[in-house]
Amino acid sequence: MAKKEQNSQEKQVLTEWQKRNLEFLRKKESEDSEGIEKENTPIENKVPEKKKVKKKKKDKKKKKNKLKSSSNIPIAQQNLAGLIVFSAAILIVFSLFYISPWSKQKIITVSGTKNALPEDVKVASGILDTDYISYVFLNQNKVARTVEKTNVWIKKANVTYDFPNQFNIAVKEYPIVAYRQTGNGYMSILESGKTGGTVSTGNLPDKFITLKIDDDKKIEELVKELNQLDAKIKNNIQIINLTPTK
Picture 1 (cartoon, one colour):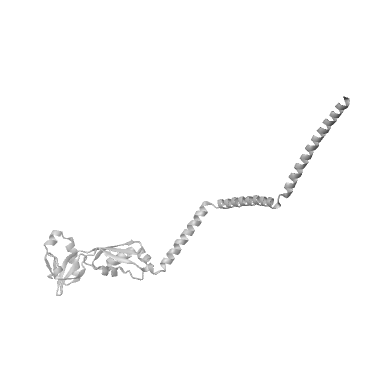
Picture 2 (spheres, rainbow, N blue to C red; picture 1 turned 180 degrees about the vertical axis):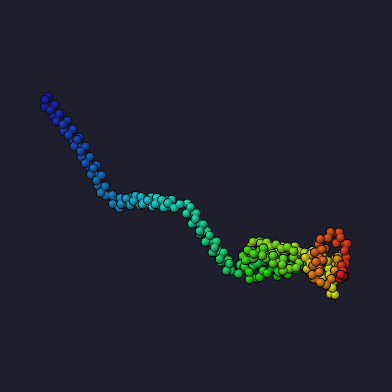
């Protein structure tokens, strides 16, 4: 009996040792297998990961630097730079237009004429085909005064501009106050005392004042006096003769 118990104890000891030995062998095999897998993994797969991380860091740094550089420029300076570029572009476009033939092509119209000829008003304006549009635009008042001084029919003139190259000369004429009888027919006498031109008999009004005076200065003085008379009195006058007396 003692021998059997001793044999069973030896078997138990052996079995426990075997178990531990088996566990040790298994652990060693697992560690060896992990080491082999690490050795078998290619180095190329590991290097790009480091490079990618470095690239990402560099990209982030670049973006931050750009944001910092853009934020460092004041808004006022950015607006000023934009304004300078815009002004330069306008100047270039204007310069190209100024040297082109389009800068002198003008359309001039005349309105308000009854007795004066539109072409005569255009000539009286002094505007030439070689004048720039900008010159006429800047001298509209001067052109209007020139028309008033040059054309005897025009009492008031006004020049207006319409984009891109149209100018209109609106005029108001002197009214006719009388007609001077001459050997060649009747000459219209304007409110200014000036002679308007010869009028055919068919174009004479039903009622008008006939002046039988040849002296231009005396006609101007007479017209000034007529302008001061009441309209009813003037309508009743038919003929005025010059009768020099002391």
